[in-house]
Length: 389
Image 1 (spheres, helix red, strand yellow):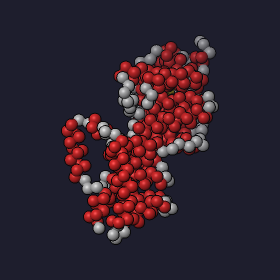
Image 2 (cartoon, one colour):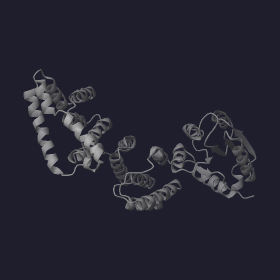
Image 3 (tube, helix red, strand yellow):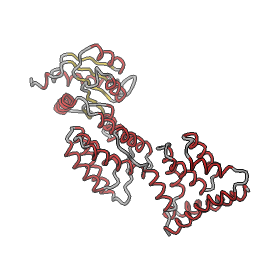
Image 4 (tube, helix red, strand yellow):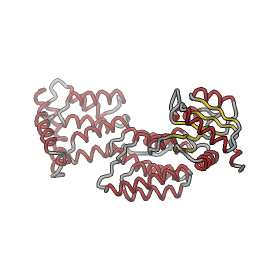
């Protein structure tokens, strides 16, 4: 028997499926395991592991009382089991399932049915790696919700497939802590799809593994910008927080998105981007002002006033917000509001000259007519001000 096969004397197997447990037990026994404890629930397994020396855990995706991801996260949260080798054995081969397993802290991943050789390789990898660096598991956790189709502009389907292949290879290399090779794979993915946010994020984590903090923060920022363009607020918020924790700085990417959409006369999408901007950095007065003025431009006076009230609750020292709110709520606001809206009327006129073909023109004809009817029905902020006077 090889030395490898004596490394895992005590093995815990957790699965609600009796057939899976039986196979796992036989394979572990064939590789030299002497003590094998089998459980159907995560709670029972946790209790056992807390009171016994365990060399390896084989975890199914589904347990009787929780899923395997929750069980692995519970092990990682305890100092005594944080570095315990855990291999997940599952029927799931989807990319998101693998990423979620990595994010939950697994040290190896087996696709059922598996061979003895495959099990031995994964168990040995689990022993060596034990636990992935926290930065890698955090990155994978953020990818759990990634869309099946990433936003890529004018990227051909063939390039999308090839880019994804390079991304998957980069993820595998990242799992094995082969930082330089992972960077090369992610770079190839980005060459094929310059808007592949996940590849920028993966490359950032590889640079972190190399302790290259400037390149790490640079690629996190680039990933956040591409996520913002896909309206993936959760991902942007997580990356924004990570950059700040690492001592970096990132301008609110939704502000840039909102300004660009406004120039392109994509009014509704621009309004949404301003909302995202205010959510991401509520301490930023520009985001609140942009949202309020966008709402005024769309004839949404009451919403604009509510936005300004929320901004003042966030920070009573927002001078421009306070002044605009005062102008809009005076008894006869028309003369003052005229001056306020003059600036935005001029901006609107200049933006309409900026492009002859707004994004809305790319929509199907029926949707264009609906938008046109809706816009004609909306009063302008100036008209609303006159009615108020």
